[in-house]
Amino acid sequence: MSQVNFDAMSDAELKRYFLSNRQDQAAFQAYLDRFSQRPKSLIASPSDPDFDAKIQAAIWQKLDSSRSSQSANNTVERME
Image (cartoon, rainbow, N blue to C red; front, side):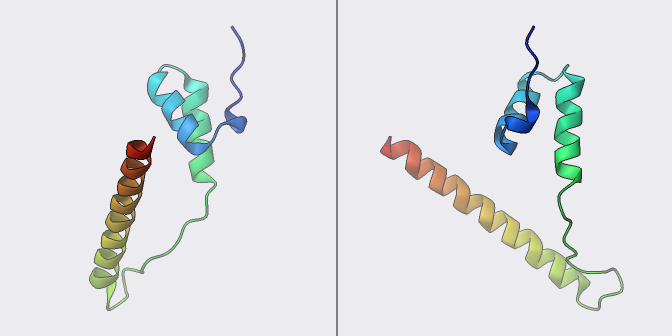
């Protein structure tokens, strides 16, 4: 059996590989390692007076971003 090079995979490829090979512990570890090394952004601290508003704004921004990328993917698929 050949060795899989997780470093050569994009994030999307690694995710697809892991989801289709859930028993592969090395793939799972590579997936966790890759995402734990990413810089974390701080949206708000619990003591921030605008904590709720900032969290809600971040959630809406993420949802809008997700919808935009899904819409773009659907457009590309239709054009192909």
